[in-house]
Length: 66
Image (tube, rainbow, N blue to C red; front, top):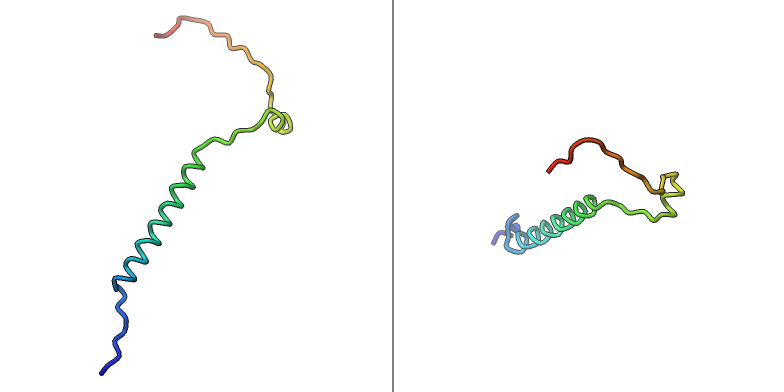
């Protein structure tokens, strides 16, 4: 009898690749979600970075648009 080589596409291998692919896709989706969320800074952190944290007034002239 000849020794058979395991098939590249055995059921076990296909299931293993499917699970691995799903994990990779989930990781990518999570990383995209966190990348889209803006990073929030506390007032102290903003002051340390030299960002203005004071109040601002917006003055506009002209007609209001509906």
